Image (cartoon, rainbow, N blue to C red; front, top):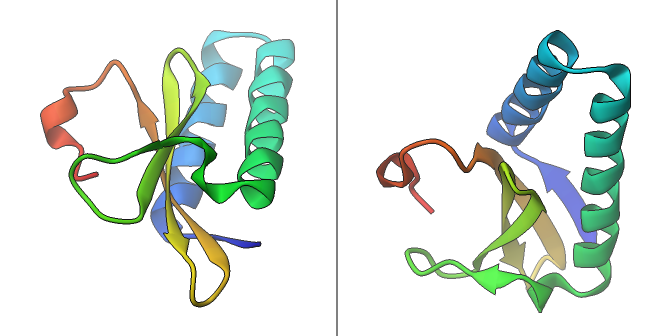
Length: 98
């Protein structure tokens, strides 16, 4: 399946990378990027493999690390996966719309 990134997904992805660069080492930045790539490959092969959202239809959540979750939408007609946001799991879950 084709994978597309929303502006929010791009923004939140780079926000995580920026945080890791400031607070940790380049190794952690690379590990995070590698985990994201691994998960993207997994969902491209099997879009339904991760847990479905309880709030919205066709939304799923993939855990990247214990602190970060990727939310994505499956668009079966277009055969597309739309990355919605990278969520910091330490945030208030009531702020999350998915």
